[in-house]
Amino acid sequence: MSSEKSSQEKTSLHPRNKNRDRYDLNALISVVPQLGDYIKPNKFGDDSVDFANPVAVKLLNKALLNHYYGIQYWEFPEENLVPPIPGRADYIHYVADLINESNFGRPPAGDKITILDIGTGANCIYPIIGVTEYGWKFIASDIDQKSIAAAQNIVDNNASLKGKIECRLQKNSRSFFSGIIGPDDKIDVSVCNPPFHSSAEEARKGTQRKVQNLSGKRVKTPELNFAGISNELVYDGGEHEFIHNMIAESKKFAKNCYWFTTLVSKQSNLKGIYIALDDIKATDVKTIAMGTGNKSTRIVAWTLLTKQEQKEWRETQWKTK
Image 1 (tube, rainbow, N blue to C red):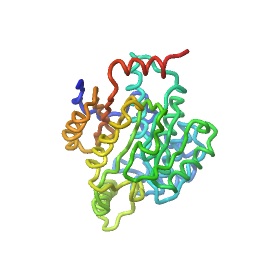
Image 2 (image 1 turned 120 degrees about the horizontal axis):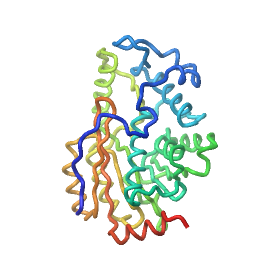
Image 3 (image 1 turned 90 degrees about the vertical axis):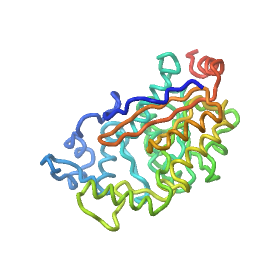
Image 4 (image 1 turned 30 degrees about the horizontal axis):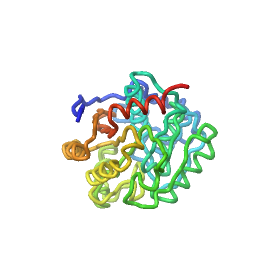
C-alpha cells in the first residue's frame, strides 16, 4: 500500500480560506446587526465575539456565511450543532487539493464533481461551502429526519444552492454508504466529521472544559456553545469505532467512490486506522494535517481503486468533453 501517513501539523488555516485573518466585525455586523449585541473586549482589550455564548456563535456563523459565501438564509433548530465555519471550510479546501492532485494538478470542472457528506446535520455546512466555493454537487446524508428537513429548507431558501445539493435520509443508523450510494452512483470524495464522544457524559465534560477555557469560569452545567443533538456528538465507541465501521463498509463501495475521507480529531486513533486500511487493502492513503488556532486535527483519505481504475475515473468522470 502506497501511503503518506506523516506530515507536519499546521497551525494556520488553508491559503484559500476566507477567514485566515481577524474577523471584520463591522462588515459582519452590517449583514447581521444582532451580532453587535454580543461583541465585548477580550482579555487583550480588543473587540471580540462572546464565544462562550451559543447565541453569539450562531449569529457569527450566519454573518460569516452571508458576508463571505452569499448565504442569505441559514436557519435550523436551536438544539442542532452550530459548526465553526473556518475549520469546516478548511476541510473543503483540502478536499479540493486532493482532487486536483489526483488529476495531475488540473482542477476538474466543478459540475463534474460529486461529494457525499456523511452526517450533514441540520446546518448543511460542508455542502454550502463546497457549492459556493467550487460549484460542486453534493449528496447530503443524515440519520435524523429533522436534520434532513432543516438542511433541505436551507437549500430551498438559497438560490445558489438549488439543484446542487440532494438531501438523502439514511434509514439505517449503523450504515454510512448503504442506502445512500446507488449501484450506478459515482462519488468523487466522501467527507465526514465523526461524532467525537463515546457517551453523553463524555460530551458534557468536554463542553465543560471548552466553556471554562473560553470564559475562564467553572460551570457545572454548561450550555453548549456550539450546541449539538446526541447523534451529532455521541457514537457508541466514539470516534474510533465510528471510523473503523466506516472503513469496513467502504470496501463494499470500492468502485463507487474515488476517495473516502474523514476528519480524525484524536491522533491516538491514527495507528488503528492505518492498520484497518491495510486490512481492506487500500491502494493509497493520505494524511492531511489541519490546524485552527491552538487545535490541530487531520484528514485521513483512502482509495481502493487500482492505478488503472483511477486513470479510467479521470478520463470518464473528470475529462472535459
